[in-house]
Amino acid sequence: MSALADGLVYVLNPSHFPFLLIGVMGGIVVGALPGLTGSVGIILLLPFLFYLEPATSLIMLSGMFCGAIYGGSISAILISTPGTPSAAATVLDGYPLAQRGEAGKAIGVATIASTTGGVISTLCMIFISPQLAKFALKFGPEEYFALMVFGLTVIASVSGASLVKGLISGFFGLLIASIGIDELTGYARFSFNIPNLMTGFPMLPVLIGLFAISQIFIELGNVGKDLKRYNQKIRGVFPTWKEFKRLITVIIPSSFLGTFIGIIPGTGGTIASFMAYNEAKRLSKDSESFGKGNLAGVAAPEAANNGTTGGAMVPLLTLGIPGDVITAVMLGALLLIGVRPGPLLFKQNPQIINALFVGFMLAQFLILALGLASVRIFPRVLKVPISLLFPVIFTLCFLGSFTLNNSIYDMLVALLFGVIGYFMRKHGFAVAPMILGVILGPLAERELGKALIISHGNWVTLVRSPIALFFYGISILSVTYSLMRMRSSRKKAKAR
Image (cartoon, rainbow, N blue to C red):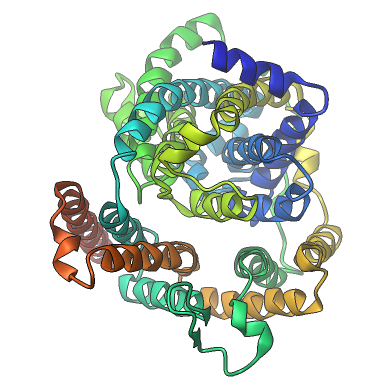
């Protein structure tokens, strides 16, 4: 507890707390604006994080992460357009409530449920992460290689509608990551004697291009189209005491469900929110009202998708394995600011971990305070003209790419990968698998090289460890589950 107290003192320091506040506020705005996901918000922060302490950078990123997940519910309720994919289930009952003139109460319930889900998931993160990190300290190169193989199987879960296209995207990411000088042999690969390619493509411009710039190109295609606007007046925000007592029996189980799902790599908020919604509907005595404006239909998915935030940080911090698209970007962000997730992070930098735990908890209460205080402002946020929004974001993307090395080359890399990302999205290729390939590929290659050097080239060493065999086993289960889920969704689509 004394360590957490030190973290609290650090986060509440006047030179650190404003960055958490900015992160949460920025996350809510980014999440509320359709087309700008949490991953884009995190990427836009990256150029500014190089000038901050690692712990301060981490709490700012956490604030952006949590705020964006919550912010997606605002546009879902007001204009039937989820700001983030995980808010898709919130539309089902949130928008009907807004049409009935109860948008204020729907946002109030979403805010309370989001905070509860976030608090429960943060407590689970605080108690589970150190124990998992102690276990992970037993890992050697063989175990880490098997773990990276498991991490790469997440590609199957984030491939979108087509597994084949997702695998192609992931393979392309691995190919991009192999460009440059090999750390173990010193040979230049795929550099074609171009000096800038000797070090490979810098990660920050690649991330900015694939996520932020490509998203801008996609959204520019919607210019001139009529966008939904919320024109009603926001009325009462808080549910009645009777409604609250009924909702809390939905919020708490949904929070734990979201936390559990978040811990499992390859799942994420979208799966958690729909599962929580289905369970709330199945157990409700008034299941017929779901889809027509039931407050429980807002509370359940919001508690679950915010519950995934703390859950998803458990494998990310202890094992370096991202659970979904946002945590994949978070992993890239942590590596860029010099924080390498893994069990040694808990042993060598406990002050960073303690600051993160406290910052994550405080972010939930900031969401509660800002969410309830800003209910009447949210419709105005959704009216920000695209003609103002996207030029500013485009400028920040190029500025962020340039400031890393003061290099025009990095700006061109960002633009190149923006174009690549745009055409990938237009033709149904998910971007997330490519990012996983870029980030996890070099880590897997490094650990494989270490294992083979230690064993004098004996490949059998990769399957001698029980822990490595365990990760190979769950890798197979992960891919099998993804294939079964895709087959099931195709059958449902044909049935319709």
